[in-house]
Image (cartoon, one colour):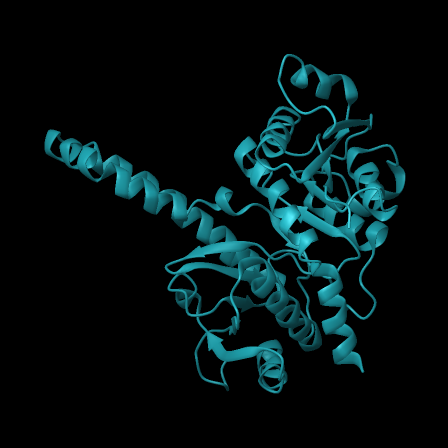
Length: 337
């Protein structure tokens, strides 16, 4: 196995492109010597950001892609027509075996479509889910699916649970991760048709540690390591999680500045509070991988900072070195025998 993990980064994706992507790549290569990044995008703009910065020129390479797929564009049409876009060119590097992974903060729709159409699903995988790590009281949980498959079938949710188990075991290091299906109550007979039909299928799976239904309030408490749901529900949970977290942090900071006494108190608790808030910072955990594809595809926030881009790129090293795609293939093959 090549000692370097090669990542194609859509340098033109995101609200702060290409600056944040380029700076994140420079930081990632500096901090991990097993990584090479291909910056795919408008060459002149990328080189302008790189100019004057110190970095290993053998491990950062610029690939020219003059076109950009905007968020508002219809993804299927954009993927088909803009062959010289940063998204399509970066994905083709993975498809052709020149890179191990693709990372983008750009169009979610184009990334989802391109992942399925250009890179392709592992044989036997019905749909590829987006699966971000979200912070909990005890560490992290995998929310699967959070944006790729709004209308899911029970068999798809079962595959999500199996793929999530591989990810949490081999990437996060949880030996026997607990799988819960997101529901409106803990009882087995609760839920909509999808949840009711999926529950007995998960219960009958010998290769996952299914603990039953969990409610949304149980997620931050850390009741499950893998939270299985369709993408509509998952995306609502993810956005609410981010919104409440951001608002709560803002209110805590505001409250600490209301009086001299609170300011003195804030000074005393600052180190402990900073450490606690850091564990609930989404940028610490990198992007959301699309599991079940022939190569690694990772989607980061459109507003990603250089820090989140850096963490996402480094996340790709562990994914490739643990051979996650091959392990998922084995799980799916075993289920289809």
